[in-house]
Image (cartoon, rainbow, N blue to C red; front, side, top):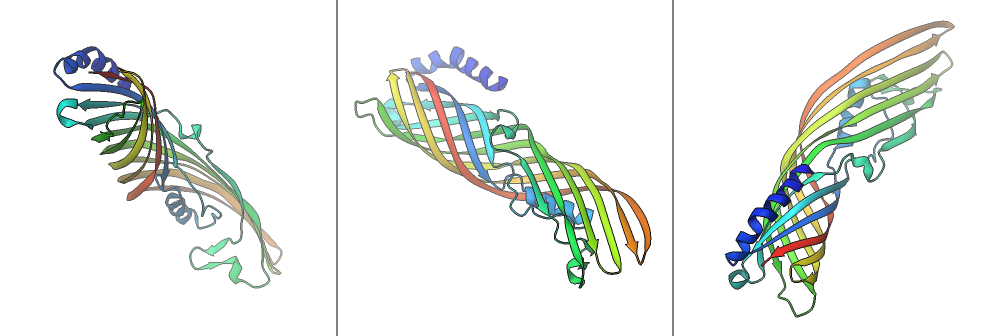
Length: 303
């Protein structure tokens, strides 16, 4: 946010009068934008990998949706030459996230029934054994956080020629770099039991870990909007559009599974504690798309 405020200050104090005197038109427009994105965090893929590490007893996260909501502040700089370019403008913008993504929408926190407990992960589980009853639940909590997010965009904007009234319509195409860093704090608790005529087993386990990711990629936006002019140098606008892009995602997962398994076989009881670290790195490519809504309360124009 500090970078954005410094950008506005420099442009307003230095660039504004210079552009106006040369025949160009300069507009500075601070904005607030809400983005609704798909598949940005790949939370389900990460939990799939963690599930492989801990033995396959996780369940119920098939519909997990993370990192869909983005709330950012930014500034848009536009350059026009009304005498030659008509309604066309060159556009550049920089933005940053407002903080934790939990500001919009809730993080994942669900209880799910434990249908099966793996005996040999990936090969055999309790559902394949006759006269066996499985009971228990899995509690999955995932808290998402964002260290930083910087979309840097350049593009062109075309505004329909003024009709004499205060309302004008425009279209905008922009594209550029998207850099992000954030992660997931993951806490999973399982309490389950397996009972059969010859054996009973109860298991208590907790997994605590962190998945940190660094994303670098590109993003392209297609936007349309409406602008209301209050006076010659002041106006407001709202914009709605769609964005597509691709990210290179470097994920570093670090966690630990601790717990115990208590078994009774033909009257003989025993307890087996376990402590299993789960560390891995993964490089993936993510395709992202989603809707965005941008609000410019006040924009200043020098002309």
